[in-house]
Image 1 (tube, each protein chain N blue to C red):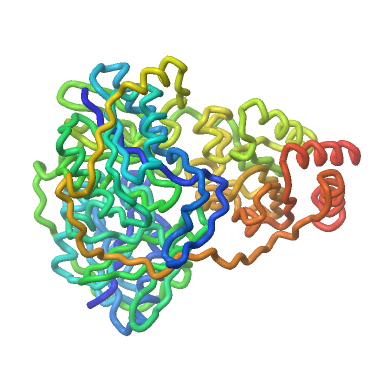
Image 2: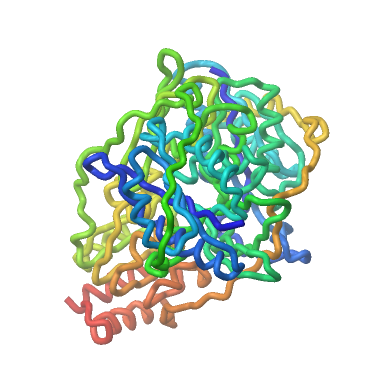
Length: 329
Length: 256
């Protein structure tokens, strides 16, 4: 019985496998849960040519490291990864299988768990041990409500962990034997054909260089209303940015999006207007030196990362703020 | 092309949520509901694909009677007919939800099954992929574009950090659509009128032959988290607060 951390690699620009940084957060979580339950932690990484990466884990405190190695795992497919990891899980028989909650994991973990008759607890933000059982905490309703969940029935129990929920530097050093696991996989098992990755166009707005960023969220309600926030940005000499829903709706170009699917910024001042503060947005701006939030909901998660907050109607607060700034210029 | 699009009804975004008496779910009384936003994009994708390639778009939704409102809105936007699985879904885990939805999809044998990426209430982001597994279909998630080609479809997937990837896949298939797939349409007056005559088939779990199975994850409790509120909230009316904030940014934070 062990905790198996399934780590993620992705091709580096030169095509060779490289770690997704979230992997070490998962590794740290696996070690912590294993220590609390007095069981062992192991790690696995799947792909082609991943043995070098796996050997890097030999210096971690783990019972075993598995390099799940196959030519058909060179490019990620849900079919390939599900089949290969399921075989590893059946071989190793872990009690828990933990993943980083990455885009890739979201694509195959529900399938892997369902293929074994289980439900994965996805996007967990923390855990505690209660009566020898692991209790996982998830966010509901965009973080307004939390839920404590337990596993029922037999192992394996699957979970994925939110980015930033555990600290990568807490992953402990030690020693681990590395083993190559070659799954039985045939080309016919894989029904999808992935084509090469690409980036789209040049980013014509570099938000990362701005000293001040004024960012607008769905609280603005209508495309026409963005002008109110734009005026504030102009008064501050700031770049105008937005949360995902604004770009999804086409109100601002995607090149102005801050968050996990957009740019990551760390300006001197970040003003979040009508942004509730979903985790996908927070990861893109929480490194800012000073954060100001304007939101009508006093319980909005954005106030947890903001230094200064104004609770109120943005259509009143923002013009007042613009006027106050223009007055001191 | 026959498309089934699964959509969910969720509480409106700025709902004030209260925990119910069981402590395991929210109090649903007095809440207003709307379509789950990611699913609105899945519906938009279904309608666009139908317009481009012909065929039929069938809306599938599970939940109590209130879900009919969301179904009618989808029909008014242009879906051809609907299936309503009349069951109380509550905090049902995604495998249990997917079993119900997959059973209804099976009887339709569509070319394409579409879902949103995740729900704004439970946020598991799993139901679509589990449905694909239960139905034995290949799937892709975080799909931005779909193009029908010889022998199947080519989809554009969004990856992390601004990367994309095209994936070729056979039909039938299941796709979880990324928000922003296209511009969401409004229902027209004509559409609303037409929707009244469109078929809504009502089914229950029993009709679908889906019996509850023992869950592999259970809810301990649902609660409003304690906020470690870091922000210094600036009191006063808009003007007063704005002027105080500028003062703070100038003299305390020394930014302006």
